[in-house]
Structure formats: C-alpha cells, structure tokens
Length: 330
Length: 306
Image (cartoon, rainbow over all chains, first blue to last red; front, side, top):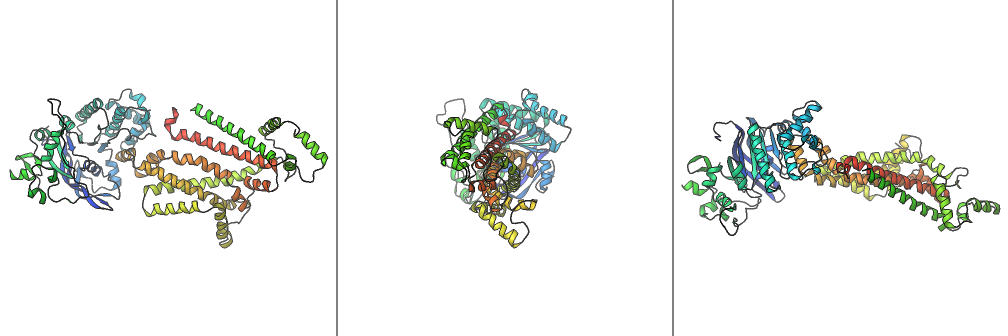
C-alpha cells in the first residue's frame, strides 16, 4: 500500500503521557509521533512494559484517572483534535469513530448481559434506531465477523461461547458503528494458533471492506510480518524505529529491532537454543540517561550511554526512521 | 431452576421441622409443662383437665405429633399473660407493626448503603471513601440498644423533634428504624465497596467505556450488575436479622411489635406465645432467604441454565 496517496485518518504528534505515583513520576509514552492512513495496518511492537497499551489508552483517552495524564501532544482523528474535546464529546467519538478490541476475550465481555444487548448498546448510543432494526444490525455485525448462526448466538450469554467466538463478538462490537480507526490491543494473545490465524484473516477482510485503519499492538513479530503494512518499534516509552514492514525486516536500523527479529524462531533449519535478548528493559521509574537500550546493546559506546540519540532517517530512506547513534553516524 | 427452588424450599421445611422439635422440647426442658403453662394458682381440677386436654399422659413422641399437628394449623393454645387471646393470633396481630418497622429499616439500609458503597469504591482513597469507611466503622462499633438510647436523648429529649417511644405515626418509626439500620448499613456498605472494587478494574468495564457508554451507566449497569451478587447474598441475612432482631430495639422504644411481645412473653413465662413467636420468626427467616434465592436468578443469568 502506498501510504502517500491515502489520507491520514489518525495523526499523532509528540504524544506524552505521565504517570504519577507515590514513588515518583515517569513517562511511559514519551513523545510519540506517527500517523495511520485509510486502509492501513500499523503494528506497534515491543516487550511488556514498553508503553504499547498505555499508548492505546491515551489515544482513546481512557488512561487510569488520577494516575496517568496526557501532558503534551496532539491526536487528530480524521482532522479533528481529540485531546481538547470535552469528556462528553469524546464519548461520542469512542466506539463510533475510534474503537478498540481488548486483549482478553475471556473477560472483556460482560458476563451479565447477552451478546446482543452488548452490541446493541453501542449501536443505540451512536446510531439509534427502532428496536427491530437495532437487532438486525446487531445480527449483521455478528455476520460480519463470521459468527455462525447469529440469530441464535445473539441471545447467548458470553459464558456460553468459546474463546474464539467471544473474541469475534468483541470484534463485532468494535466494528458495529463503522469506526474509522480500530485499535487492537494484542487481541489474539490468548487464542490458540489456528483460531488466531482465522481471526487475523478476518480483520484483514473487514479492513478491505470498510477501509478502516488498524493499529495492531503486539509483541509478536510474526503477526506483524503477516498483517501489518508499517511497524513502530517501542522501547522504554519511546518509538525507536518505524518504517514499512518489508524494509524493517530486511534492514533493521535499530539494534533492538534487530534483536527482536532474531528472537522469532524460524521453522527452517536447526537453530539450537531459542534466541533471547540479554538483560531487562529499564524499570519505568528508572531515570534514563542516554539511549535507553544502551545497557543491552552490543554496539553501545560512551556517547550512547551519555546522550539520547535523535530520530533520523535510516539508510537515507524517507519512510524509515530510527533513534540510534549508528544511523546518525552513517 | 425450578428444581433449585424446590430443593431450597424442601431444606427450609426440614429446618422448620427441627425448630419445631426444639420449640416443643422447650416446654419439656424447663420442667413440668404444667408448671410452665398453667398459672401458679391453678386448681387441681384445672390441672387434671389440662393434662387430659394436652395429652400429657401420652408418650412423648405422641405429644410431639399432636403439638406438630396443632402447630401446622397455627394452634399453640391460648396465651397465659393475655388471657383469652390465642397465642398465634396474638403474635400475628403484632406482626404488621414489626414488618412496618423492619421494612423501613431495610429500606433505609439499602437506599443508603448501596450508593455509599458504590461511591466509596469509585472514589477509592479519596475523602468520600474515607468518610464512608468511618461512617461504616461507627455503625459496626455501636451496639444498637445504646445507639437507640443516644438517638432518643438527642432527637427526642434534647431537640424534641421526634417522639421518645410508642407507636401511632410515621414519626414514631424513624428513630427505631435508624437504630436498627445503622449496623446493617455499615456491613452492607463495606460489602458493596469491596465487591465493586473487584469489578471496576474488569476488562468488560473498560470495554463499556471503549463503546462510549456514559460513566454513570458504566458504574451502575456494567459494574454493579456483576458486583450485586455479594450484597444480595448479604441482603437475605440483613432482611431476616432486621425483622427478627428488632427484639431489643422494640423494647427500647416500647414499640408493640413481635419483638416486644417476645420479651413480654418471656418475662411472663407465657410459653404458648413464646413458641408461636419463635416459629413465626423462623418462617420469616426462611421466606426472606427464599426470596434471595429467587433474586439470584434475576441477577445472575448463568443460573437460568443451572
């Protein structure tokens, strides 16, 4: 997909989130800038605690109250600034224009209400209509996510459905109001592999039909390779590399990306032991001087440990950026 | 579902049977029932008639069967303290007064405790939360008879707003209802708070927000619906203990309900009335628990299929 010709649906500029706790404050999302275009899937990759989910919550403006706060930046959805909207205006956007698929299908549906009532609730809020049409639209949403026998399933309680089925229902809720952007926060982590593959195919088909943009959060580079057009690699609250999937796989510019790709086990050839990245990511409360990856990096030198690297083009490619001194030196 | 209810009703009836045995043995345990059931100045002729009428010359199990048969028809004999009144009739006569007072106390408990518990959980760690916790602690620390007396002192004697005791108007109900309710409010508030804390972080609560559901609906519908089972379970105990536990408060306020009758009957060694009161209380207890079993099914859809 050539992202230049499509219009950007989601534009994020210098987004910064601060968390205040009793032991001090830290910045899990530190100056993110990226955009997602119509019909495009962007993967956000990183280890646990790298700030992926925090980024997603910030975009939805659903950060934990009193604890986390967006301190800087701008988030524009189809040209409309979200960060200055009132809570009431933001509620009209949530679920209608930007939606989200949560991580755990076992717990993300409310056990006390039927599948249908949970889909209809979103429809009623954003696109009200007579009762009968709400029901038929809810059935349509279930059909869209390929739930078999939707007329019966609509009256089922979540507890009566399998994990894969529940995650489809969560997907149905997310797409029911035809949002422009969907954030999928590790939606397949808890599904088994075959169900996972079906679900990813489904997401791609839905995207082809509706042209929605998908922000896919994962720690699995394998999924990124098969689903995403572009990737943002996150480390310790920063985007350390971004670019088209093909270029990043072929030519990773950041040592962390390189290491992540190397950890994906391949089926061909006997690699012996599984590869890991030595060391631990910095704890969020840690004060970081220089490049956050330096302590785990094979190439780190004195400057990496004392000075934070700027974000620069990798290999002189305008679509591919990285924050690494090695790229600056080239 | 129906099976479940039948099972519960069955076990309730079985419990009632056990209670009837205990009640029956009460009059045996306290010595010769003749002494217990007849006034001290009864003549020998009265005693002989009594022994014949009550079958006291029969074996014990036969006596019990007679007692049980009569009890099922609501016949516990006539009151000794209030001559001419049938024991059960007298108790039933006072039951509406107790239900009225207990009903008000239950209403106050629920109307205050649920919102307070929800608000405390939602604002966890804030001033609201701490105030609610303090309020709950107070209620659980004060014995209700003591609270009853303090309330009389403040609102009746000192401020003169409400009557000290007796019955007749709605104003008479307010102080005793508060004295009964406060302890229950405390327990119910704390239970609601902890149940809400558990569900407020749930993924489905987040999903509701993701859908753009207004915050009050997120709390009251999505979160509370799932937390409700805990306070509901307690509600059975609460309703039963308010209705049957009004004995002390009814005495403090000289409120002529079943509790007051119970105390007076004990004081007057009026065994037929004591037996009737105990069984009436037992039936109330069981009915309110059965009601909770029914409400479970309403709240928890998973039980439709159980």
